[in-house]
Length: 252
Image (tube, rainbow, N blue to C red; front, side, top):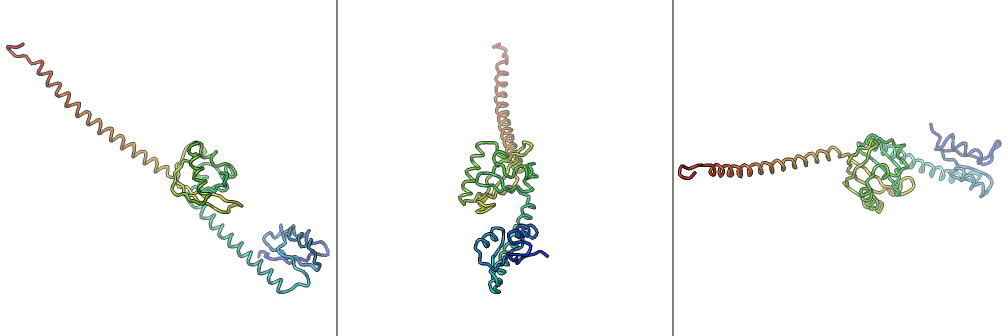
């Protein structure tokens, strides 16, 4: 089973807490270390804490103080495990979602790029994480400005819902996305924007085809009307020409 707590004497026959703590951090990175010593030495306590000790207790060990320290360790580890479970569930949900999920820092640098985003755009996360989002995916200056304005509002705490923008893929093609975005107050040490995009390229194409069909139908109706009116005019012209060509016996 995994080690959760280590009680370490500050002075040992073959070493000290200062030399052992870095090794323990490598061997049991999740374990909390309590350093005990018989000398009330402030610098030693500071050094122990700087080297990763969770607590510093004077000898002779007081049972109540030790229990209180262990209780704090248990509570901290409980919270850490709960956080790990939450993050694991979030990662599973994000990685399974058929959406382009991107997390952006306030300076537009990409902090997270989901697996579906990789599949959709052709870029791997390694290629884009840490780089500026606009320079890769939004080459159009006008569109950049519009999205930057949206992002400022989101960072101010105003979520964005249902706004559309294109994304340029690695092969130069474009995908139309509809985005929902909101503020993450603390992600990777600072504020960030979580943006979730749904690919609506097929819908856009269907709408454009429908619009084109409507235009062609309107042109067809107009041409039918013109042909009908032209036919009437030509029929009248033909009748007049026939009358002009008619020859009467007494008036050639």
